Length: 391
Image 1 (cartoon, one colour):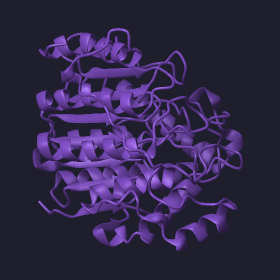
Image 2: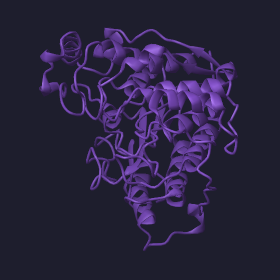
Image 3: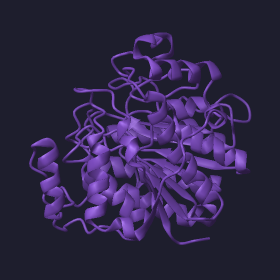
Image 4: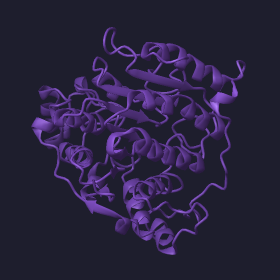
């Protein structure tokens, strides 16, 4: 297997644009790619563009009538059918919506194909991670669920065990729903508690369909205000043990940057530095527990489009390319100039929030009065015994 990483990129993914004032501003993608280039990471990885997902690929996850509805709204936004979640405040219809959505999906599917076939060990599509789209409807800024499509393609190619780990601040509900009754797919979502954030799902008790798939869905719902120490501790208390047990043949991860304390749409208090720690942990876990180190890393949410998203996902690209960016490095002036030209905002100067996340390992014991530890315990008690593991 090639040790090279792949970066899936086509400038046309920036046409995934819900319009002025929508939080999902495609400038976050453009600025990320510009920062990747400023650090020369486009030379550390092979930058490739996959073809858009065709109808047969989309139907691996999405219903035929839904794809037809997206096509109709894409041709004429006035025809958007809200019964399919289209033409809403979250998911406004726009001309070319199907084409842009299918292109993003195609990059994630192409990434999955490349790692499965041994053309690369790791592949990144930071434009992807649109994890809320359901088989028959749009939701939460997501039209086609590229994460689910990547997993479905891996299964189609012969994978028997695929793990999905989602660290977006929002529950990965669309991916969980798609594979709810499929024991070949382990879905793990680490997110803000559904009491305080969309989509209102992702309770610890959601563990997969009764029967063979019970225990294949894992949800760690963290209290609002959780910061670096609790967030990383929660991840390390659940994810490595599950992957060690499941031994996936491929790992798909979703790295929404909206856990950050500056994100305007959520309530966790995680730094860029903790996000980088978890990205690096996913990389290490892929090499330790996944056949051939096969790792597909996706973007996701993230609505602080200058300070947070470009830096977070540039770290992700560097880690996947075995060329990690030094956190204290001074960001090239060319990128800071580009940020000002595009947004009239002053760009950050370094690749760090200036923090050094320190957390306590779960094996050292837990505090029953601590809300994060309570959340971890709830998840372990709900799922681990179903998998034959000690809670």
